[in-house]
Length: 426
Image (cartoon, rainbow, N blue to C red; front, top):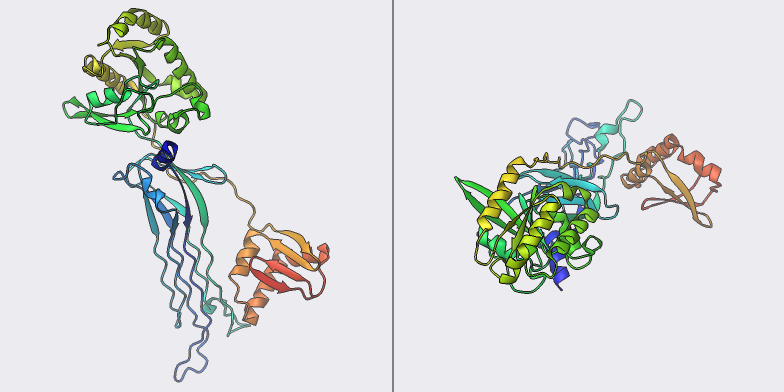
């Protein structure tokens, strides 16, 4: 049950669908004293596009638990007297800062929304079909040709929320991370004396004085195998990537705090080696307990031997908590600031739109697939002879007619293109 709650908090898979373009119209001017007014069919309006917009008023992806399908409006059909149809309204989907957008099927990163107002066009609306006014020529002054609107795009996307915090608080389960966060900020996370109390990351804003603040993220405890999904680690390791400085808390009552320290570093390295290069200060917690106080000298020596600075504290009594926070804040001033990534789709050359494939689906049945030819079939008014002839010309221009002939298509065979079912004739 806990894992489901985690997924709803920082991961969601949704389907977005842009609007279909409006149909173009076949019509002619019929006015008094103008018996041959010519074609006057208007164009269809474009379909609405789907945008993802970064909005800081949101801090979780919980809204997508209730709604999984988001669709923009369709465009309206064209009218008489060359009137174009109304465009479909665009749809804006608001997401919190730190939302990474992936193609759910391929895993490709489509965008990274980190700043207020940043937007990403995730599905473009279909183009409106052209009315017959565009197909008039000296040879055909009364064309019965128009285009249907282009279908919109449908895409399944995965949203991943990575918390945006200045300082990440990491450590083994029960190290006292939530208690430390509560001690230095106004955050009130759930706190109890057992491992994995924190099932979701907590954010806190600490006041440093002189109107300076710092944002801290309490990351749930990591255990061995977290980079492979063991325990709760897999769901939260990604939140550490956005932080600039780490506070690594050690449990002073652990049988071996130094071993815990090495285990956490190993998990970070296995997930993302760059995490080890983050500026880090170590805190040795629970110094209010004699057992921890006895361990302090040996643990301090071992951690410093590894090149890390370590400070003693008690999150419960607040002793040393401000010193540790201030030290992490000074490190933050020296930490590099990563440039804000552009929220734009990753460019990858797509397939040739003119390309097509022909396959036999049964006795006398052929299937033609290809982006351009399927789009042309979808936008054709088959009830008009002029439109059908135009489609035949497209088959000829793309080389599909010749390819079908060479493949062995016979008179009377069925040729399927998109949703169109055609009868082959020489």
